[in-house]
Length: 466
Image (cartoon, rainbow, N blue to C red):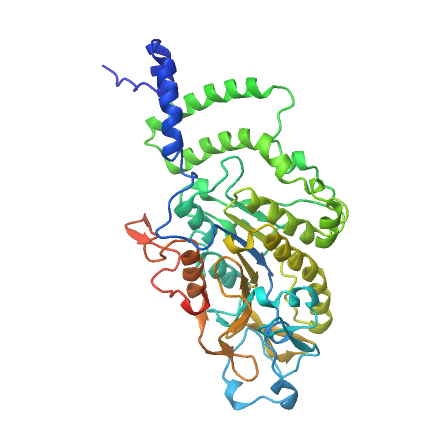
């Protein structure tokens, strides 16, 4: 006798007849108390300080000595190569030390030093927690971006956004829980936001929104112009019933379950996505504050910063905003001019985002991260600066971190982290901690062992927490 398929929930209700209303009510009541799927909001390990993350990714590696780590000694040792830095190998050969042409001033009550190229961000100095002692493993873009995103220098581990979805789910079941915004693809492309061995439902959703984009078509082929929502719902229910039977025969494979779940998400997004991605619903004065006077016309980065606020406001767990295509901050030549231009593009939208989050009461529960995959050398490379993994700066704001402070230090030249050093593993451990997750307990069994974002390393940087 062939194996009989078990009744699905829908078949059971159809055959029972009597009591269907009560069963339906019971199902609704239960749905309010128990998770409905892998993306449903989950309870963290301990009370969280933050609920969500916005990562402003300055891909390419901004120069720390030109942005948030002033080093007056560089002028004194102009053109020299002191013995203390002679052994620090970088990706390419560099020359003598080269000072920054930019002035630094202290801002806010705490007097956080910020370069003149970030005048609007500087006004929010009391919100910034500048980590000046970051360091990473290698001075190459590809492995460093993998490490910053996934805690490993190869493309074999899930991104931190995928880990956060796995551990916490998301608060809005009608939008992707992990959204990646940016023009085109940076180095490594989609591997930066990959789920890898985690179930596919935790993959980041990348959106490349061109100027003047149609909010109703942010995801291609999402809208159905031929069927009404009710007809689509009936069609989808039938398809999903068949899909479920197909999946049961194959032992609930993770990739297949993720594909089945994507159909349901696409249906729900038809109603939610156009509204969420329509920045014209914002007051014109606010759009101008971000640098988006008209929808999508005046700066992709500015638009994406505004979208980041709209998405986290609607319960999206993780939003990454990549600054430009490829590696715009990779200033091997004409460093000074390029940094001034790049900072001018980033400054206004970033400051507007922080101010907007704070005004809406969202900053305290949103962790904002600003930085690249490494820094740049204080030694010259012609008119530019080379990659520098020995020491660099990034900053955090909101989400349970202390504002108005700097943490750690590089040497007197800004070359190498020497005081209170913070590795990328430490950054990830701290981010998870702020969202209520113990980085040593958030694990996933794969290929015979338990994996975690921070591998076998990482410490929570308690000193920067409120």
